[in-house]
Length: 622
Image 1 (tube, rainbow, N blue to C red):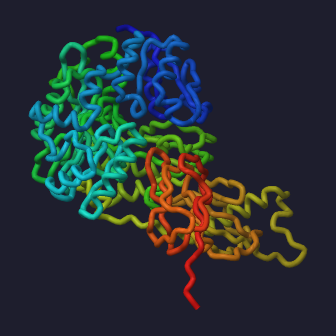
Image 2: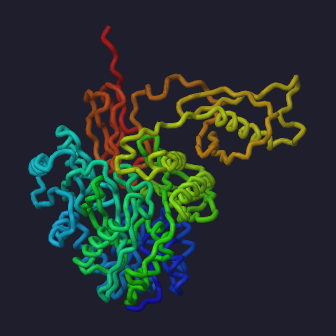
Image 3: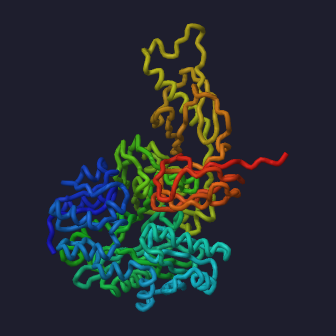
């Protein structure tokens, strides 16, 4: 089972992360890349790199044939799949084995056993692992799923059987929403995973999401490396992860760890895996699923154990026994991780695209930032919009929390809108600070968009003035042939406009900023705002949003068009479904109107702000 050259069948921060350890252990490394990633840092870091196709994942990172061909061309004798893409594809693992390539992951049989949530749950019930009540049967008709959901009792979770990452998942609290939830979850699952099979589970309200890191070798040894608490989620995707869990004591850790080890043993597991549980307020825990791969949040486990989990993966893959027995696994301190995303957290977590103009990750004691970024790299609509993972470790949970807040404040990223300010607010919230956050945290608390401060406006105007003035010799800056007067600068941001007067007398600002055409992006007090310079722009003839045009809120692909020309639509009615970053977004009418024209077709790739539907506004009868 020996190997000498490792191909990483992934991209971005995880590809870079895996290659760092592989190189340190003496292996040659191979990167693969789509056309969208040809200039990405992970490509430059590898010893060699192979192009695998155009940007769409089905023609590049999800193409097993192209990955295997890249391994053949480069002479790689092992493949590490990272997470996502082909990491939990049993057919790919089997194809690697058939080609004589070591798959750095579990056996294909173990992936298959856990890859389908319905089959996995049946297997865990047989193994006496506690499971959430639900339905995981073969009758997948809409009518039967509706009937089974009513038998389980609302609220109920509708989940893609082949899924993960929150895709193809819906929480249903009202019977009237049930059929639509089943249909949209199925459509999203088919698009993301190629399978529309669904399962139903009783929603355990106000629970915690606690997962156990397990590791197994080919010699029958299985250990757990403690738990991670991933309760703070949006759209069923993790936002904050920490280890250990504030809700788990030594006895509960022992019992949950034993259940996770039993789950791994039941399927003949090998390598790194994560068994996910819901932990109720009463201390009861229920199996959710098993991720048969390395997790995004593995760094917090590495921080408290002092172990390199990728190193363990490589050692197990080459046939070695686990480096430690359960009795020798120890934990030190506390670690918290957040996912820094290109998304507008104050606009429904809308994914963002665009070029990263300024990227300065923080450093400091206990701080680790895993990323695959550099200035000039674009966040594309084809992949997950995660920019980086920001991790902090401390002797106590409070030390880790405060270090993480500082690290986020000192990390500068200018370009697309990010969730950095939102993450800081979550970490500073009293409920999270007290270790009390559950999966209902983001539902129970509102985090409205912050107002743009006066300091942001004046700083943006001053910086624009200085950037303009620096083009001229110092004695001529701001010069007029009459008495000196302040320079008027008109800015727009967040739907507002202001006229500001700048005289150049204020001291220079050290706020990070970037000028992008007519825009200036300013970072102040951890809030990044994009202003548009409208000083010389002609006056607008109509208020924004009054033109009756539905525009794409981001780059993406048109999945379906729900209306036809001539149709009367009501405010809030879904007109178009747009898929971006593997999530389907329902684009709705902002007002009552009549559809005049549809400018796109299903399957079309569109850019941000593309006009999709034109409507004639309703006017009252004379």
